[in-house]
Image 1 (cartoon, rainbow, N blue to C red):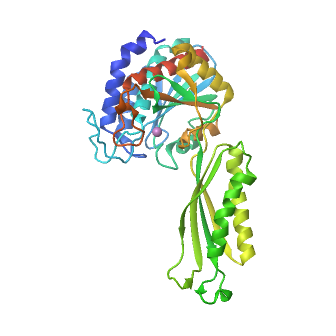
Image 2 (image 1 turned 45 degrees about the horizontal axis):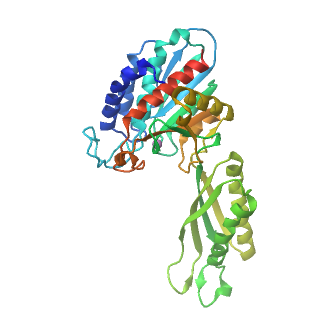
Image 3 (image 1 turned 90 degrees about the vertical axis):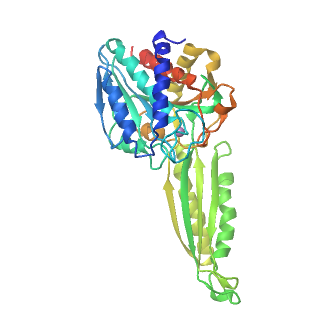
Length: 388
Ligand code: NI
């Protein structure tokens, strides 16, 4: 259950979360937040503070009990371009910016975990890196920037939590394997030869190719990817044409794909382009094809999932860990997984009060702050177990 130390700090955590909530900052512009974090981290003895990027902070705690693993814990610190419309007294004072995804809570949970673990320094082996990551909400995201700056170099395992209004307070939801989807974008231009609608034989009609392409691209999911492997190909924008009697010279098609496994994600662009090329060849058209990668899928390591979910059950009871379905929203925690295995979980903040059930990224989003202590206790228990 809860350590007395965690309970004693609960009101302080809530107060700090409210302070952060009142001063939210957009992705890549978390200047006050970073400043506040540094001043709070400086109060904790034993931490080495690093600034690998313009915003965002890393604090390193070296255990005093000898060699051991290196564990990273990560929180994201940015807010969203939303005008807050809640009536809480600590509502955003920055017009058009709101902590509507709970990252203020993530920041506080990690900070208090650092504070408590620093007190246990002499009993811990190895090293802990507390990663306060900027810009989760805006691709290409802050995680990849920090990863490239080396913050997860030499890390053996990494953990992260996202607060979630769709889950009861204090309940953790996660799964082994793919947890969040990879969200990528494709742009296709079909280039034909325009002309008079009365003389199609003098043209190469890109509309015909586009029509066949729309249907054919769907066969990738049904025919080229295993039925048990989730994938979505959605065409969301098409533009062409200027008059009722002119065959256009070009058609532009844009859309997005969602995948979970690295293999499916990697093979999809090639399969798409093969169909585009084949149809263009068949009709005498040419094409341009581009595929831009967004956030990769968060893949939870099976062994770390077993360990972390075991700690959650042990700390709070069997019913505090729930296996959930894969989540469609992207999450750039995945960038850190390029360097080490990890475990990421949602932590519920819904206590039955409808105000706390409002979805994330909404102007009325609110959290049940009594969830914060669960996140702190989890990090505290997890690290002490892994580094003892
Ligand atoms: Ni978020």
